[in-house]
Length: 173
Image 1 (spheres, rainbow, N blue to C red):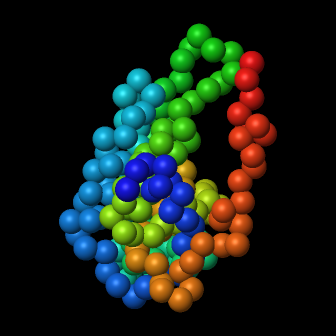
Image 2: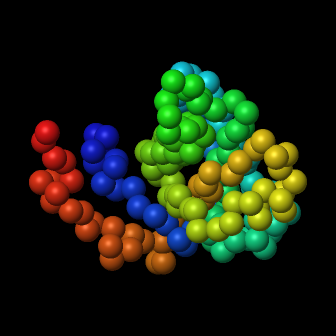
């Protein structure tokens, strides 16, 4: 499958089958994140893999965004290790950007392996960081729910294929 086909096939899954993710597939997903590019290759991203019944119960207790996925990956970054160039005046810090690149790489690798994902950010990161005892410098960027799509309910939303036309997306300058 070409990358463009892979990108078109990926969708936000909100219903997962009661099937474990094979350890070798999970390792490939994590490897895709590990080798993903980050600003100045600083690699400030840290992922926390939740798959034990206790960890999944805990995350589901603080956000509905974990759904019933058998694996929830917390994509985080160390705020003391992000790229923040001193020559700019706009207070740029690369943590969210780096985490997004890593999450995208893992999401696309999961899709390529036949897994479904949900990139989730509808929650209070500060609340989850507190509940999981994160040190102050570790920031939660997003959750990536991973598993096999439920064959009945794990389908793309009706909005999945809605895209603005290219002339509204890309502008020549």
